[in-house]
Image (cartoon, rainbow over all chains, first blue to last red; front, side, top):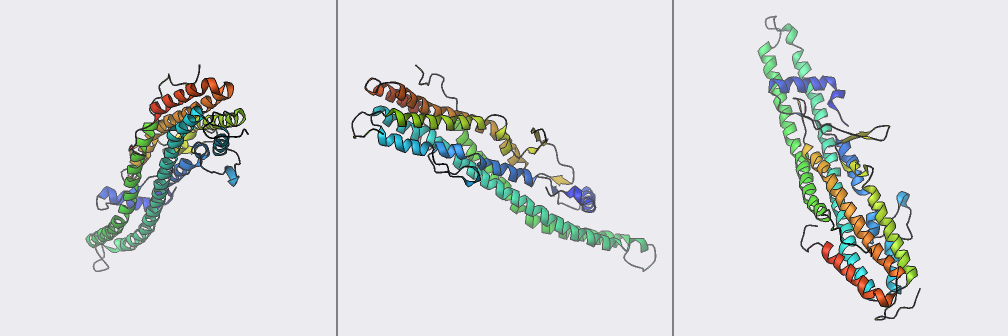
Length: 216
Length: 137
């Protein structure tokens, strides 16, 4: 994770000037690695779902899985006939297969927005560090004259130094304010997607009546 | 494989058993993914997996005064989604298992006697579990 605490001199600038109130920027503490880690697992466990959804799939390390439910259904269909088998096919298609497919599609959607969000946070943090570095150097340069402020006409006085510093902070803030909407939009899009897909999972998660059974 | 004439009642135990077992195995695998915290890996609140294999969760704390969270709502909503996903997958495993159970009953009984009964049970289960069209998906 890109972490401000690894750049103590930049952290000091943010801490000092946000406390002062001049700096509107706040360091984004979101963990971009946690989002990309989670994104990976939103699709990594899909093999069995693909099997139930009757989709072709490969196993780990790209291994082709020769047998699966898809093959079994094809062979059963070629060798069986009658109301019971037809009812099985209809049931399979409209319940487990459909649900597996919907869970997969929802997972892929969530995977996608989390990947984008993770990358967006990373990009925003890198941009912030870059701009903070430039700001920190400019502030040090500005501050360089402070020692001489008691010598008449030796350089800018305290008031001027402070006002220059504030101008630098405002310019930095303006840069950050143009960059932040990108990541904020990715976050709100991710939230919308999670909310939308949650409705799908909720439907499939409804309790199954206990009297449904093939047991005799 | 038995020859298949359309319209004729034929149950072929060999292929039915193959289907029954393939489905049952997938159902069991899906059930396993809902156990042992595997699904928590989809939760970005997970901070890290320690050497003991246990998951550590990032406390949902306030950022320091010079910090902000831009995507905390996303992390929270995913954290809350895991139990719903768990139940959805458990149900899917059970729904798949119903398919396997029906095929197994066909393997174990006579077509002429049971065809209508098995069809009726599948019909009932389908009707109960089918989601109405037009629902979000």
